[in-house]
Image (cartoon, rainbow, N blue to C red; front, side):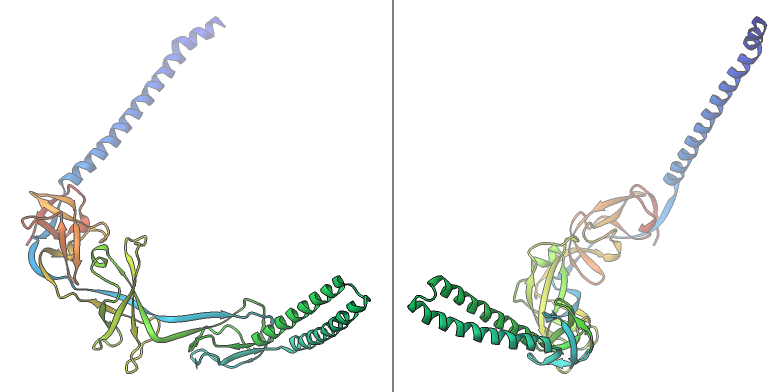
Length: 359
């Protein structure tokens, strides 16, 4: 046993220690290699030079007018459902038909309702007759006043039942609640309807609305009742007069304000729901302002930024913008006319990137 212990101490233990030391050395070398690789990548990023073109912001006379694209929607539309149950006996419309308010759209089988109504009317007549007899008998003491009151309650209940069945009978004749075009017909002759079953949609497009979203710098200049011009995408040479009908008092998740414009659908160039166009907000006011091309912008108009070249380094700068035109925007703050703003090549940049200016 002592001999084995001696062999372990003299031979095996030193070997194990050497293996552990070797593993530690290899791990350290691997870590150093990773660090050297990362440092090399950082150095490479710092030394990479990106070619860019730049412009200097210009003072220009700009108008506060602006255009916004949007979609046309009906001023009035209504989805209606069945209020009674039964099988569709007749269907009198198809998608695209124009109907006037009150026109019969469909008829639900009402045979059982009519039977129930005749029975309810007979029950009502009998209750009224019995009430007359009870009122005559109470004078002689044959019935008491409580029995008369109970009979009056039966009459009122019978009257209520008749009225309910008469209403059900009317509802089996489904009529158009408003005038307009039929859309989304979801029933057919022979279909069985339950209360709440969708029937169709009626769209009134005599008056249309245009729904647009305005930035904060735009919405502060717009007023309810303001006159605007609308140019449909389908008829680019036509201009339609519209009126601002509503402005949301609260911005949505994208920091924009829902605004609706109403206008009469022109008979010569009729439009349909879902078409699109452009609304022109015109104020007749001009001013001097600092501007840059809109292509300089990084990110969205909600959080606008641009790259500015200082020496040979690109610096990411936040700006505040005002009016937006088709190809340029007003800079309210964040830039001066002496700064060099990156116009092209910014997609490869990050804050602090090295750049060279090309013509």
